[in-house]
Image 1 (cartoon, rainbow, N blue to C red):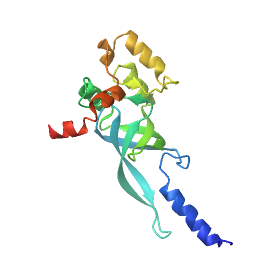
Image 2: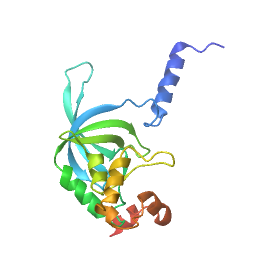
Image 3: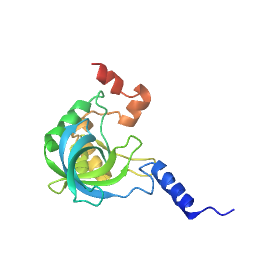
Length: 185
């Protein structure tokens, strides 16, 4: 049985729309925007302009706000020790400032996973270097900011002044998400 081409094309379109944004089908992009909110030490909201056209007519600019998680780092949870300090450091550094966002993928929550630069400075590297976050790592990989983390630890900067800080992953495994707890306060 032969399937007409239009049905095959429609099936491919439906499949592509159902794929997670972090799949291999995601197209990385670079864009600029202004930081409008900092949720915690590794998540923020950025307002940007996008161009759109309707029915082949002239392009118009539309303002959108995108939620971004900084790639390569893991900051303390907001209700965790040093969580609010990490958030405050990121706020002081980037809030209401223009940044360049290099989006690599999207996570399961629809956030852009991106490298963030302010005046050509890598914000993820800055956070880890100053002890406001860990380099995000796996069993086999120490992460993209391993050198910065090692320096911050040896110089006891920020959260590394604590002799045994709990990584956010461990904190969530032991105590669960603090989102609900934090919202109730």
